[in-house]
Length: 405
Image (cartoon, rainbow, N blue to C red; front, side, top):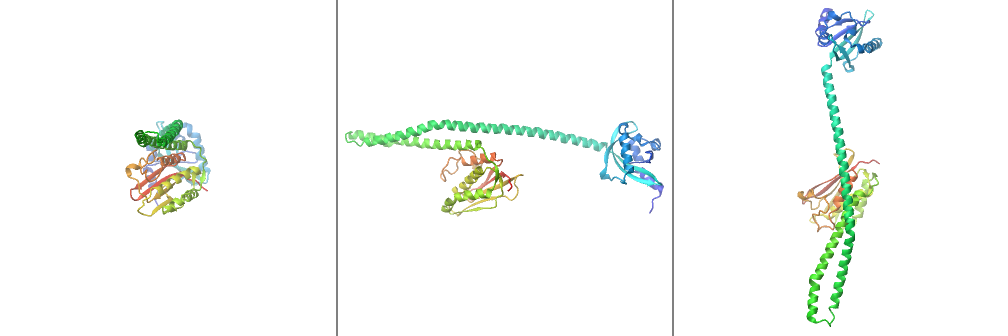
């Protein structure tokens, strides 16, 4: 069915969008009711007049150039997706943003250009508000990032100060501790020699018995207590010095063959694993970025703990592996899993603190290993966490920055 020209004109006239057609001289030849709502002109006021009446003075030259370029070009129309926002001018002189879709039609040798126009003021207000909101959010993010960076710097400095303080105090305690250890050894030797002298028959028997009871009881026992306490304090100081060094050592970071490091640690502990009849399995371990000695220290501590805290009621099993996915962006998550005695939930939050020991009867040490592991991983840009069930076993998960080979 063909639509009569008069009906087509009615359809164009009732369209909500403004429709404006100009001839090759840029004179308006069609101006529908939608255009009237947008610009405020009645058709009679603009028909036959230059299109410039709808354009701000400052934009007329540029706009005319764009129109002429389009008229001469091969493109017949610009689709809605190719719209661009320009500025229009209402009858009252106010300027506002409009969206324009333009098309070209040649009628009896003359070029007619038709523009479909929408008032973009509301959209522009929304876009401006959104832009301001985004700018505000970006500014808040920048401020928050700067604040977090400053806090992180302060925390790092505080950590370094604490480590330096621990190192200084531990180092200063070393000298008097060595003296105590030496003097207690001298006392032990003196007591031994005195006890030997007491065997001399020239000493009256009753006096010999009294002195022998004194040395065999309080004196010798007190010296043993002193030597035990000195030994314990010496081990604690050594542990604190190791912890402080973990924060001060200079790392040589590089791409690591993590699988080779884990296998090297397991090989070094093979005798212990065989003696305890423990099955140790190593899965695929992706490469990471870090210091080889530091990462070897991490595996040695975690695998060593797994071998030390076994459940003797069942065959031991230790698994070293990596999670296939779910790792933080730019990192890999590795794990050391055992089927040992497990760790009570109430104690798990204390695991990575210095001088914390849950089963001191299971293995020697001062409870400093996991604190060092956490410090090492933090310095390498990683993290560590634990999951454990008493009677079932324990899994330590730790992350390292991803590396490529």
